[in-house]
Length: 81
Image (cartoon, rainbow, N blue to C red; front, side, top):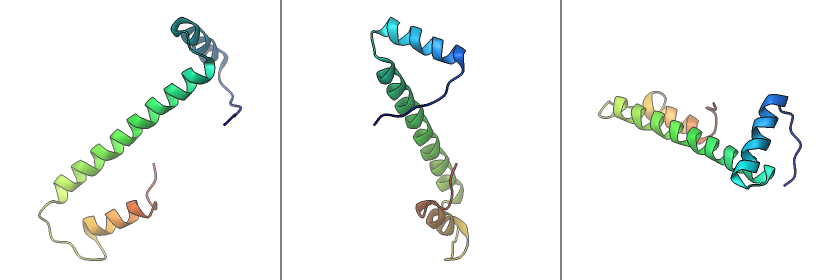
């Protein structure tokens, strides 16, 4: 997919130099950078979920409150970064 984005001049120049240095196209550089950033975000969400699971492990829960309710909100997409 082709898109247009705006970047600060300095960031654009850094990207151009990096792409040239690595022998990649500008598109490849930005696609790889975005993928790496999104993977980091996914890892952070997974870490937060794991820590919350540890905190709430063994605690009682009902259908309206607590971890199960939070999990339903997250799964439904009601909780976003």
